Image 1 (cartoon, rainbow, N blue to C red):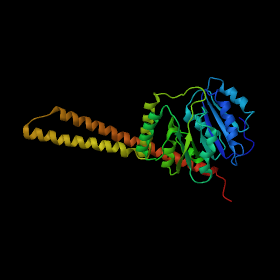
Image 2: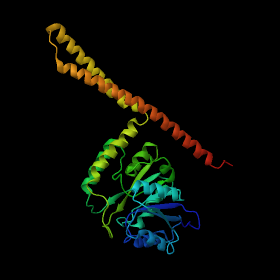
Image 3: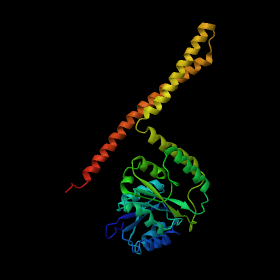
Image 4: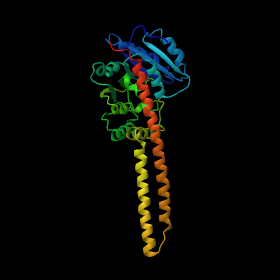
Length: 316
């Protein structure tokens, strides 16, 4: 892996899966965008299991572009893993997520990082301007996300720039890169947005189809649960358990009233009581188990924080 000859301020992370047709032009445009800029850039391209010759092409492009660094996944691992790999390889204090398909031009990267370098924001996301074939699906996704998470940005899943410490705290979960803004805002980081022009793909085809919609919805619910109940899972499961126990108690009172006043035993009521008691017990047991896991996670986070603090140089 080639290291840049000097420190860098901004690391552009570029996951690339079968983008051999786009990478040469993308890097040429990066060179033009970075030329004459006061901040120093590097581009970290993560070859995510390409089979079209992207890796040997990248190796040859390193001689042409000194700012280029390359990392390789031998099999496809997805964007979240690619961004994680890029983050571990990057050297800049500001990171930028940018695709290689040229739907977004590198000339907009300096605009994304400017508010962060100026100390005005911790994360800057772009919102698409231009014709977008998946605009309807994207609109629904963003509307649901804003309703669930109350993060007032137009586009949650787009190109973005962010401080390195935001990535330090990101869970290493598949596809959770889509909710980086939500997770960063929940941790107290400031978020702003700027318009970014969207262009047709230069070459190749999109890797995402309609089959990603159900996965995206389930991921959204998973993130919501993590933010709402991740620290106190017993609160969620305990509330369900209490509701079911209360339902069983009320049903029992009704059953006893009917039995003693009218001499009638209703089998369905007793079935409801048994079902509620069993499910309520399961939910309570799940909540208690979740609490133990939450305690272990909290201890692990504290251990990581202490390790990170120990790595910091002493103040002079």
